[in-house]
Length: 220
Image (cartoon, rainbow, N blue to C red; front, top):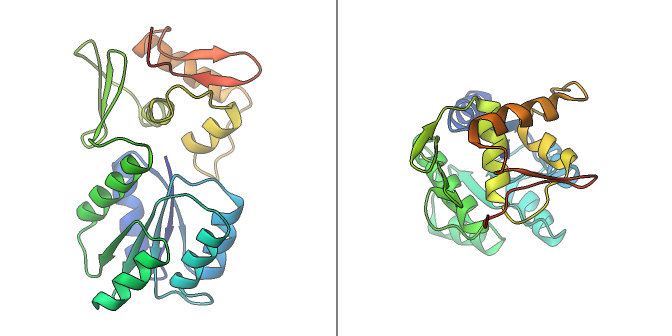
């Protein structure tokens, strides 16, 4: 799942990005409000981590613009402004959660995971489709209670498809949420990855809709 991290303090941004990668996310790091606004408007992100104290364009303005433009991505605000009025202003502007600095990255990852789950109608860290289960907190996958070992790319692919189970996911969308934005995979890389995934989870788990994309159906 792609996450936009907007933080002007680069050491903090790198720390957040590292923690998100270890948790199975695909973070893009930007350091000012104008670039954040541009990236969030032109690319598809599953969630946004947004600092309020940004150069060029402050985070609260970015938040309001995104919500006014109809952006539905869950947004977690970060800020050294811990006064309750600042938290209320952020929530009123459309944030889904608020984390005051200083913070532990483990709490950030947990809070982000929670708002992402809520946005997809999931109450627990477990994603399920038929007899397949993904424990998103521990990044463990099993089918019929048998553990399955996946690479990071395979895990991101399966997690995205199961998160959107019942919906056909176009190849271009899946590619954007599996590979880093700066990585340009070979033309058949997604199909090769899909073949590897199917060998591990079962060919019947992910179906191809020719000319449309892939789908994980919740019923056999």
